[in-house]
Image (tube, rainbow, N blue to C red; front, side, top):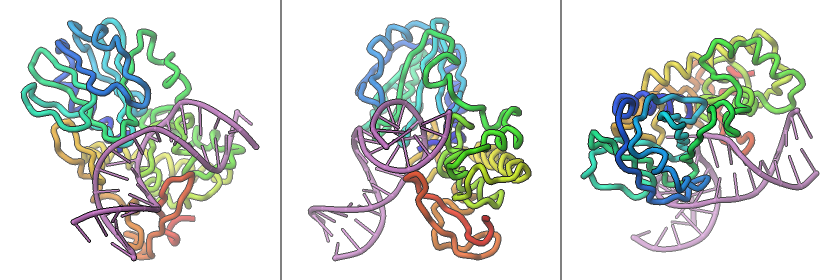
Length: 271
DNA sequence: ATCGCCTCCTGCGCGC
DNA sequence: TGCGCGCAGGAGGCGA
C-alpha cells in the first residue's frame, strides 16, 4: 500500500538491477489488474535495454529506446527482485526477466495496481498530464498550496491527498503532515492562512524525505525489492495510533473518517 | 469546476 | 475453530 516514499524506495532498490540490462522474457501470469496489462507488452520490452528508472507521482517509469513501461503499485502492490529459479508466490502477476538471470516480479494481491505501456512523451499520458507538482520539488511551495486552497470547500486533508494539487501524499503521510504542522484534518482548505500553508508544505517535505531515508513505512505487508521492510512505522506520530498518547501533549489520539479514509489526529495539538 | 460517493479485489483481524 | 463483518497504504469515474 505504497505512498510516495515506498515507491521511491522501490525505484532506488530496483534501478541498479534493471538500468542497463536487457529484458529477455516477459510473463503476464494474470493480466487482470486495474486495467488489462497490454498484450503487446512483451513485444515492446523483449530484447531491449532498460535505460533508466524514473518516478512520477506513484508511477514507476521504466524507459527503453521505444517508449516507457508505467507501473503502479495500487494499495497492495510491491516489486521484488528474485533469481529465475526462485519459486513464484501467489499473486506474482507480472514477471520480467533480465539477461542477468534476475526477475522483477510484481506482486499485488488486490490487483489495484497497473502495468501500462506508452510510446508518447510521458507528460502527455492521460494518467500523468493533469497531475500536480512533486511534493519534494521546489515548485511545491507554501504560496502554491495557499493559492490552490482559495475557494476550496473540501477539507485540507482531502486537498493535499488530491493528485491534481500535489502528488504522492497518501493517507498515512497526510495525517502525519497535518499533525506536524498542527492543522486539524477537517479544517476547510479555503480557511487556512498563508503562514500555515508554509508550515504544512514544510511538514510534508520533511516527513516524506525522512520516510524515504528510512525505506518507507511497512504497516503490514509492504516490502521493498529485497524483501526488507521499511522502518518509518516506528516514527509515525498519529497514524494507526488511535487511543494512544500524543507524543507532544499526551492527549488521546483520535480516529475519524474523511472521504472514506481513516484519519488520525491529536485533538489538542491540531486546530 | 468541484465535491462526495462508489468501485475494483484479496486478506486479515476481530467479535461472537 | 469457524464464520461473518469491517477495514486496509489508491485513485479513476460517476452523478449531483
